[in-house]
Image 1 (cartoon, rainbow, N blue to C red):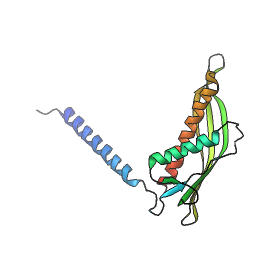
Image 2: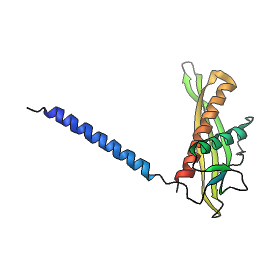
Image 3: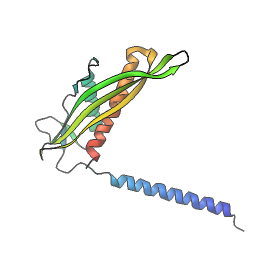
Image 4: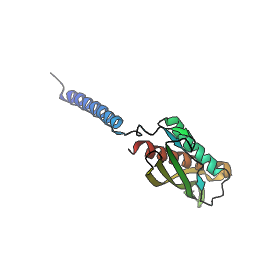
Length: 172
């Protein structure tokens, strides 16, 4: 005699695996890629309009964006004069606020929120593909001073750089 509960579990497991496999296929085939006429992108130094006063912020943020594009390899990073496209950006604001307050109103973690605007232009077709404002955050331990603040800032920059890359290579 067969156990109906065992058959049901087996069918449920098989259906789950099939749906996960189908979802994976759908995901991998729905993302559009960069048009064939675009091979390179120029990424000039990001402008800092935040007034936050962080030394080297422009260079660090630009380096993070270049690293994301280099790792992805959809567009080769090139100079402004020879590139097929250009990605220009500006840091609009950075805020630093308490994130976790423990007993006795002691701030233990802080959240740094970075907001930046980027525009991606197709130089070959001479048109702006997109312009968008991105905002993301990073947290850090409040007792660690400036070195810990750097951790939060780096995390926020990395998240925005990933968002900018995704917007650039998958929005077609």
